[in-house]
Length: 219
Ligand code: AMP
Image 1 (tube, rainbow, N blue to C red):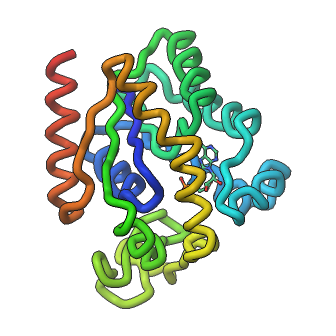
Image 2: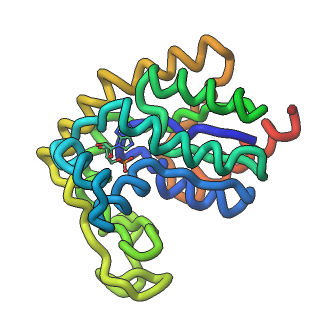
């Protein structure tokens, strides 16, 4: 199964995708994590994308498409891919369809996690992540057992530099203008499934897992 998890920043895509991928044995491909790893390594690519990311703008299509599709091609054909954060524009969606088709694969479903705008900012500014294992916490809604420290590996948690209120506003604007049109794009091809992302994390995960298992059964 090749799936896309769609939704605005703060909808819970990362957390849900990590769990879903582990439960269903899918390759989790998170474009934001890929770019952050490039930046952390000090690579040329990392340097090219930092100003876009820090301001909350999308990285240009000609950069991100190549970076992600290389990984899609490498992962295609195994147990399946769960894309999180890519595609974010119609051009990215079109290039993804071409790459999958060239690999003899296709996209099976796109799940749109819906969360009302007024909840998103609070979710994002309270978010803390583990730089080692990428686990995601929230200071009040999903705190680690020991404050500020990852439950999995004890690494001190960090706030992403783009998880501040000012940058979040730009990220939401980028989402509305460039990414939200993807829901209509995928609805047209009958691939879109809407999902309420507002419940407790475990509840959303149960519903999401059930939906994907049903979809896999219908294939
Ligand atoms: P994320 O972790 O998915 O919220 O992504 C963090 C940042 O990385 C975004 O605000 C963008 O600057 C950049 N980024 C991640 N994925 C994409 C993409 N598919 N297209 C363009 N920019 C992206």
